[in-house]
Length: 288
Image (cartoon, rainbow, N blue to C red; front, side):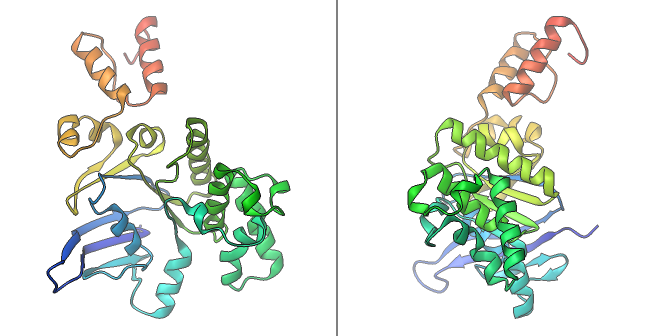
């Protein structure tokens, strides 16, 4: 099956040909399949944000290609327009981009730009609001009248309302309290499960990404340093620490328990997995 997104030899240099030239990403190649939930991690300046802006043509590469459903997104104006509707990006602190008179109008902004009829726009607004947990009674309120967490949900809903096949979220839980972070993450996981869409989540939080991602891509100095399942990536704790990254606390605890002779099974990098593994050990049930 053709990957929904393929990246081939992608390189981007800022201020090319000047003394301030900087290579933000260098010779990146990878495939992203339909329905994947991917965590994109790396320290500040590693290339993550530059990379995601190429996936729907917001940035043009210095060299290389981005293919959507097998076609170069920059081949024609039509291909680029399709990519920008089908690959939706929610940037960090998106609530600062809300500007319409009502929550409804803000969520409807994207579908309206798609030239959809009013009935279809309303259907998408209500659908997106449900996905992110925005109650219908808030739709006629001004974005200025709702909480910060609700604004974040509204901003995410505005992208979901375009029904993208690929949803990219850049630090979607930044600045939220623990309850708000957990709720947003669950909304994202539920959205992917309900729609079968592809989700790419950019984050600095290993604890968060361990909860929902099935594949991790680690950026380091403009290149991909690691790419694989969370259990495989988190086993490389020293390499991650050398990059300035961390490992979920549960994974470190599990490693220490194994050193002490507790026969925990892999993977153990979330609290739920830890509880299950320890419970299995205590009851003597397999697979521990």
